[in-house]
Amino acid sequence: MTTFPTLDPELAAAITMLPTVSFSDLAAARTTFDALLGPLLADLSYDGVDVREIAVPGSDDDPDVTIRFMTPSAAQGPLPVLVWIHGGGFAVGNARSSDPYCIDVVRELGYAVANVEYRLAPETPFPGPLNDCYAALSYVHSHAVELGIDPDRIAVGGQSAGGGLAAGTVLRARDERVIPVAFQLLEIPELDDRLTTTSMMTFVDTPMWNRPSAILSWQYYLGDSYSGPDDTNVSVYAAPARAADLAGLPPTYLCTMELDPLRDEGIDYALRLLRAGISVELHSFPGTFHGSALLATAEVSKRGHAEGLDALRRGLRVATPSS
Image 1 (cartoon, helix red, strand yellow):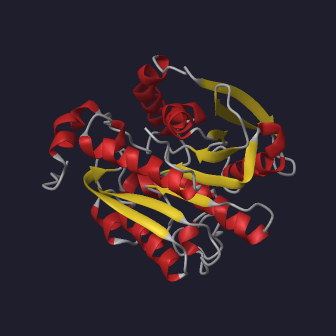
Image 2 (image 1 turned 120 degrees about the horizontal axis):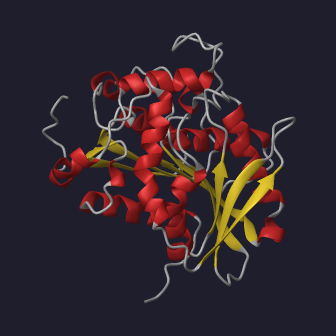
C-alpha cells in the first residue's frame, strides 16, 4: 500500500485495526462490515432514547420502507428532525449501523431522527434506494403531527453513499416543491459517477475506500443499463454532481477527508452550491481518510463529530442549551 506522509499520527497508529474492504467481493465486504460494527452495536446503550420501527409506504409499487424513528424519552414536541441515510457504497450496511450517530443526535440536540432502511444495490439499483429515502422523507413530513415533529425544521443528511442519497433526495424535494427541507448535512458524500477528479484518480489504494471500489459502487448502483462515466442518461438524483442547477437548495454543511477519493467531488459540489447562492459550511479535515471517523477516539475524529452536530444544531436554528 502507498504511504501517506500527511496521515494524522493518531490515525496512522491505529490504521492496522481496520479491515480491508474490497467491493470486488461484495459478499465478503458485507460480512466484513457487519463484523466491524457488530461489537460496537452489541454494547450500545439506548438509555434516554425511545426507538420504534415504522413501516412507511414505498413509492408506487415499491415495498414498504422501514425507518428507525428515535426521539428523546419523554420528549415534548414538536421536535426538529433529521432524516438520516447510512453509508456503505450503495451496496453495504444497514440503518442500525448508524444508531450510534443517531443516538448522539437525539441525546445531544434533543432532535428526532428518522434513520432510513433503504434497499441496497445491486439487488435494487437506482431509482429504488433513492425512492426509499424520498418515501421516508415524505412520510415524516406528511405525518409530522402524529410523529411530534416540526415540519418546518426537517434536515436530510447522510454519510458517504448516504450523503449522495441525501443530496439526491434534497434535489428531488426542491424540484417537486412539496417538502420544505430546511438543511442538508453531507458528510464525505459520494456524488459523481464520472470519477475524474484529482483525488479520485490519485487515491487508488487508500484505506477503507479507493478508486477501484468507487468504480464498482457506481456500477452496482446504476445497474445493468449503465454504460459508464460518459453515459448521458444518468439521473441527477442518482449522481447529484451532474445537476446543472443547484439554486434553491437549503443551507448545507459538507465535510470531506484529505486522503479520500471522494474529497474533490465534495469540495466541488460545495463550491458550486456557494456560486448558486446557497449558504454552505465546508470543512476538509487534514490527515484523515474515508471512514477514519470509525477511529472515534482520535482527536480529529472527535473534532469532526462535534462540528457536524453543531452544524446541525445551527442549521435547524435551535439555541445552544445554557450550561
